[in-house]
Image 1 (cartoon, rainbow, N blue to C red):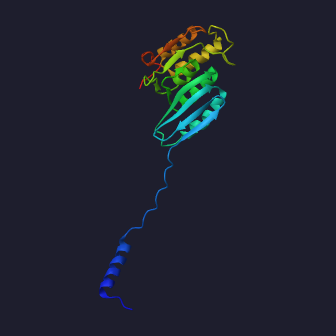
Image 2: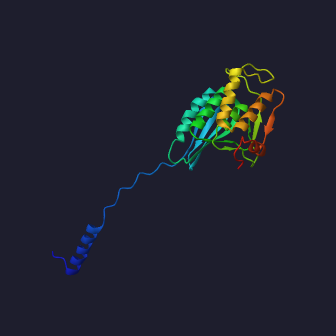
Image 3: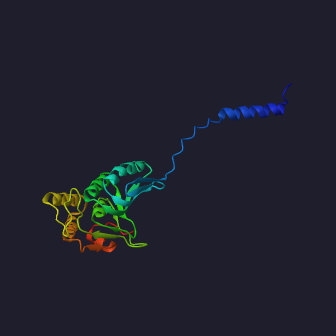
Length: 221
């Protein structure tokens, strides 16, 4: 069977079109969407959120050696190109000062910002972690967050429970060196003096404006 002239012309046009059309490029693999993950540990949990470029880890609960160990997995969740900023949000309960200092060093080495959860009060061990942030946010709303310069708590590195803060010379050196590494010099000195002055009966509590004026917070948004 022979094609009519009109069909020949149509076939020729189709062949020419196929010859001139470039092959389709293979589609790029889809980038995995961000997600929320929860890492539990004894006394608390770490919740990571990578759904936006402003990635966060939220710490809820106690702060001790188990927290530090679990934090390694949480940090890995945020170790991806899509996280253009990284922040730890603190809602910390009972805590050990030595482990808080270790956690703070981990965050500073990775360039994290820190924030106290709105409405939460951040006592001395939590303060040590907060101080490690490149940017340190103490929110004013919907409920102001607060910093409590409470008595240096006892643990295996920081002595026995007494009403006054009585760290040894070596312990004082650890705290002062840490604060000076994390904060501007005058701020580090002022924070340390408040910690030594605190006891089991009284301590100073700062809101966002006071912490900002002191240099402990860098923003109150």
